Length: 204
Image (cartoon, rainbow, N blue to C red; front, side):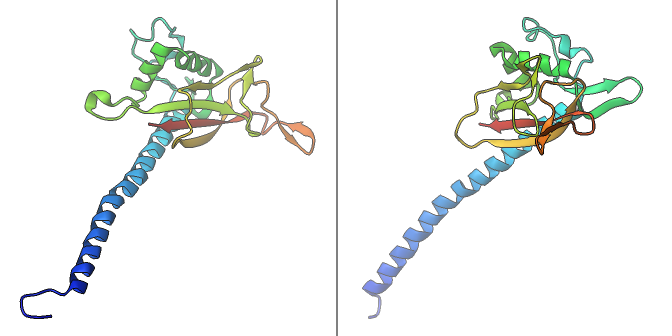
């Protein structure tokens, strides 16, 4: 290399290095954004499942709310059974509350109120609006039915895009149609309870 001049090889090497550096710098934030997004969705799914199975809801009679009153009354859905003597029975879900929750999620106006009260609509704070779906399945993976109707499989329609699911093992305070699981060809009840899986799906 002569004084004051750069060789062609050095210029080519610097150009390739800079091109690669810029490409990687633009690519990495997208990768970490997907990871952050998945962590955020997992956090929301866990939070909602915990709220539903460990809280009886607010107010104590929230499950008496009808579809025409969901916009005018404040409430917070919670599916856990509450006993005056023992308090909240964690993971023990009230079929009556589940039925009301399903009706509210099946109504276009009420589902938006439920989304807001569950903290899944942060648009007023400049945040995101989360979509969600809640279902109740037996241990064989079939939707739980009660009086021959699906008890809970409601919310937004689940897309084929990135969806995060969180499951909780629960039991119901009433016996559903298909609580039993088949073991070696026989229908067996687990600990004489109607055991099921509450599945919460969350996406953007």
